[in-house]
Image 1 (cartoon, rainbow, N blue to C red):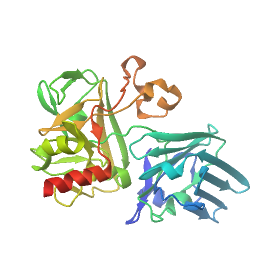
Image 2 (cartoon, rainbow, N blue to C red; image 1 turned 90 degrees about the vertical axis):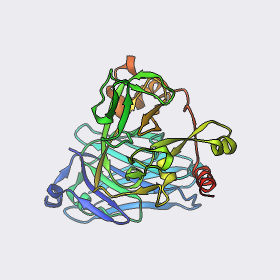
Image 3 (cartoon, rainbow, N blue to C red; image 1 turned 90 degrees about the horizontal axis):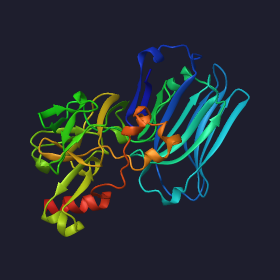
Image 4 (cartoon, helix red, strand yellow; image 1 turned 180 degrees about the horizontal axis):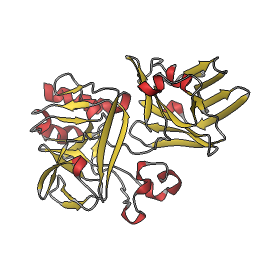
Length: 346
């Protein structure tokens, strides 16, 4: 079970067993994930379309409706499923991750919109969605988007892991790969505290769009060795320029904002990538290769059980699920990160 098709502007990948499948092979449950820019258009804008005539007629479309939200329409023969996801598209900066998940045998589905950091913006249940077909996965293309992908599983929503398996995390016993840490192990935080790991998280995702690996290069940012992270992984950056520009001792800078061709670069690792992260009692910074790196931030997710059960954290025992009231440090917006980078380059 997992991802079977991945596409972006640069090309596409199809898992061999699905590439060779008959076009009428059913996909009874699964997920379509797309990442789209928010353009602030004043007219309806078609974000993506899949259409087929064989082995029987069907289609799927996502449309941005200014003032209303996102419209999903799925047709299968004479069956039509429609849903409008209320969302103020005019006030969203950056991109959106939209997921349509269906489980036809269970007669349930959902469509959701998230920021690319996993913050859920809107969710709507869908009754009795039809299955899709191998033909739909085989026809998937980038359509000018950062990411389009099909999975044969109902993929989780919410916070996403962002660290490579080999990332060395400081513990009282020395540095250990993040993938080796388990619930009950302890780690050292940037402040010098020893805290327990409440849950280790792992997820395999398309290596495109907001999941595309970024290599943070040493010795930039105080790193002793390179780190490979997802674009949304934030690094703790401090210094007199940070204090002057932002009025705080340190800030969090997303890896995507640090990519400049030298200190940080995107790299290709194949169609899929597995990311890891650690859930701690508080929203604290881990230490890796001499630098502070953000641990998983979950906000007040524990208060929303109906959403929590749709996430990777659904299996965390309630007694271990923390509440993070707010991020421990300011997260720089893209324009602020550019200002900081230009100041350091001067």
